[in-house]
Length: 392
Image 1 (cartoon, one colour):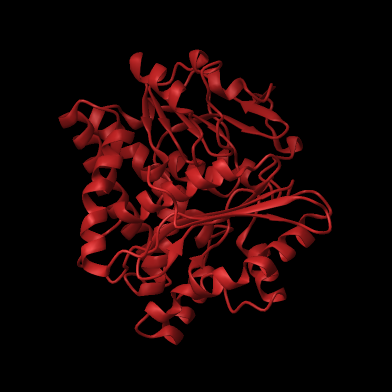
Image 2 (cartoon, rainbow, N blue to C red; image 1 turned 90 degrees about the vertical axis):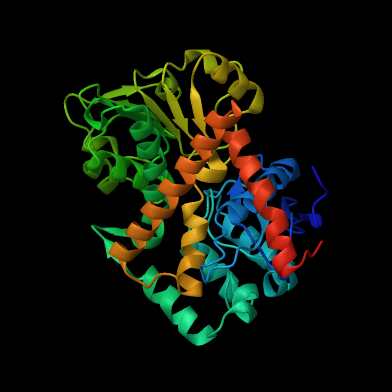
């Protein structure tokens, strides 16, 4: 793997906590990747995520679209977002990273951080926006910023459009895999780890597509019902961190240990919370046919090899959860407007095409979907570099 364009570690002079920034690649001088906050976050983790962002951007390259893929990057802070000191750490981190946000790194919400918190901290340190580095690439900056701001104001059944598009993309990847395999939706059960931004939206779209959500795990444990959970009731009863108020559970809902979601009798598992959730020690408990990586890097490579050997297909994060990032740029560059129906239709079309292409390439090459996605990105990166130049 090539060395990243930039890699740095920051230490907070107040708390001693560390933060990281890795810019894996620049395209037209700009990169894209969210900012996460979680205890135990490491530079190695952020480097892997930044490389993944390079792949996600390349996979969405369409020479006929207005959206021009950027390079890949990622930021991370080793801190519990629930810690009373977390916001101050975030502000000081962004103050230190301000030169990079202004010139080369566009960022936004990720694990542990919501977009409104990122925006508030960005304003506090004098940034125009967390994505301001891309503004010089826009044909009409004022119109583009207005379009994105209006899109963030769109609410669909109590949830913001910005939260829903990522889950729409995950769901479409799952549905594409099911359709290719001839698996009926009404007989497909789903278990999710995480009911936050990505997990909650994914659960909603899969339930509305006719699948049965039988288990959901949050920080308190796993809630399960083999007959199906009331997804909308759980979404309405969750807090800002995706934790469900147990008072909302129905008589048939059971409370199980936190890792019970792994062994749930379901055809589809959706890890939508933390990285490295599936490893060699616990992968043997999985009986599902598909794992859709709504989180970043939830399945360790060694575990994925063991899963593949026994017929479990891992739909990779670089494909499955890429719609969140792409939606920002589809909207900002003007491929879509600030409208929910238009956003969902575009997302479904793009994600179905990308997932189908990935699975077809995997079948043709006799390899895994992840290897196929990497091969597709490897085909496109030189094309992008030739068209826009390579900034490394």
